[in-house]
Length: 79
Image (cartoon, rainbow, N blue to C red; front, side, top):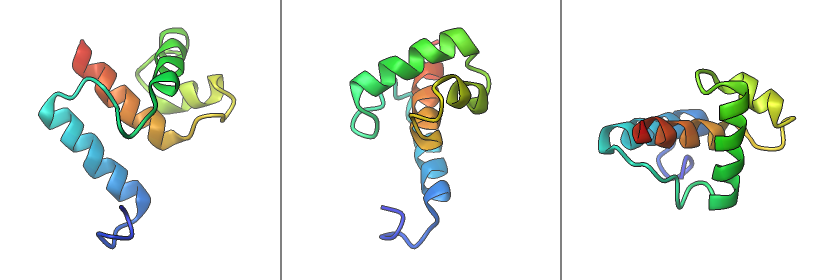
């Protein structure tokens, strides 16, 4: 998608996160698979959901920052 709109991947993810926030989306599908979302939710409960880096570190880098950002945006909309 980033190439299609001629933007950096990080910028494209930021646009998506803003969309998720504005639309109050609570599920990250189709951008993050359900099993991955569940892993991120569990990690956020243990490492704290305020920042991405502690979750990334807790997961030992197995899930990328973009998936974590998208998932956290959806998780925050559930609260």
